[in-house]
Length: 54
Image (cartoon, rainbow, N blue to C red; front, side, top):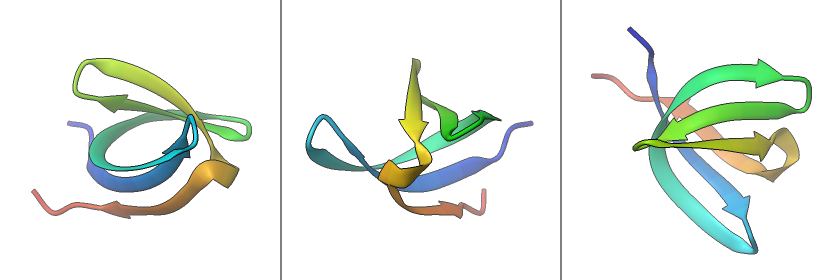
């Protein structure tokens, strides 16, 4: 089972806080799944990421 994370990051000029599933890391990017959408987030745009206890 994949771990759930709380993430705070910048996307399209907005700051987004949400829970997500970290799928994989590709170089300077983290690939996350939020609901059914998959996003590629640059590590420099991530302000906070922490594991959530289920």
